Length: 557
Image 1 (tube, helix red, strand yellow):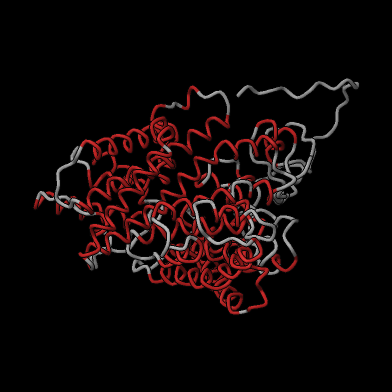
Image 2 (tube, helix red, strand yellow):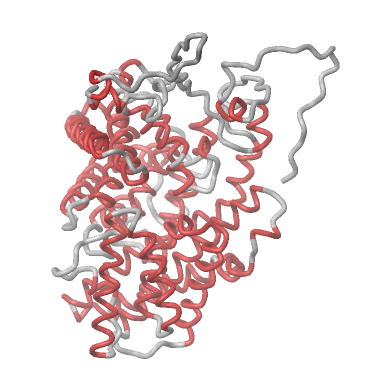
């Protein structure tokens, strides 16, 4: 992307002091900032984050005319409190953004300011390809600014992530960890009250956002048994069974819809007063977590109820179920423009429309993981139903592969170096990641239905696609890019008979293991699987491995 120089002024040049109220990027680069909020003109033009969070100036120490060396720290300075050091200039911005409501600001301590900055500007770069101010975490932040329950959960998750990322001194690390746990506990307490309070029906989005944040927290920092994550998924399912189903029934009644046919849900969602795009987006996010947890033996209740409540599971086929979930995703297509207005440009909106089909593939691939989890349970408990359910799952996987065949075929052919714009680059990054979610579904299905069979040409094609997509992403984005490829790479490692590929995947997991306990558990499970394969020469079934009692539970997406 060419850098466009700032327009030349037609007025006489005069020397003026550099702005002290401009954004941090302009101040760091020592250039004039037009101070447009929330994103200055220069940052908008360069498509980068724009941060107006004030940062305290370093303490000024007056020197005498002789410029004698300053004395060493006094005993009182050396014994300053931990809290004083933690709120020092180096560790956090000066305060929360001015947009935070007074009610939410009251639950924050000086330590949380750096945590908030991490959640808004660093975490989005790890989980989303959009600029931080237009990302998924930006949507959650809009809710956190208004509701203490969401704010507590944001600070809990981001606080733990920041402790992983930064090498704080031991006392500071302990204090930050303790504060994150306190936020988590406070958020759970408020969440429990909100779910029990029938008068808070208008707060559904705050409740769903908090549930999603607490699931992410348990997924990454849980106890290795999955107890906390399972509990939150059950809570989300209970919420779905009650309020969300009631809201949709009202819409169906008003619209005179029967629930028959493939398009009934899409029609219902578009009626006035239907479930909002933001609610649909949060439901999709939770369903993706639940699908990932289900195939690891930890979840599934949310998606099962979603099928019963929204897609009439008893009447419709698995394919109709997928199309119903597709309708939820499409309903949420324009949520960024709705929630982040007026800051969301028309260019960003066009990008969302162009990527709509892509994110529908992601949503349906997440549902396929849940379907696989159901199939693996049937395979072990109810052999009589296995043939029927296996055929239905196979048809659903084939249907998704056919409907999105152009995306799946193209994903591994595109190179970032040949893209003409940042928007094209973001599309390719997302396409690689999302296409990689479909191929391990093919591998897992083949292994569940033919446990000890040799690799077929279809399985080898899926393996090649995963390795091609992941290696290109690693070349362009490094180890950070592998965070979004964790699940496809894990499945590929179990299925591949190529020792070079398996060694490469283990190297990626060694790097991921340094980032979180969740990835470390996954890496250790891979070592267990490889050891057993060396001993008996038999393939290891993913759905059996992750349910074993001698392996710590983990959920990777």
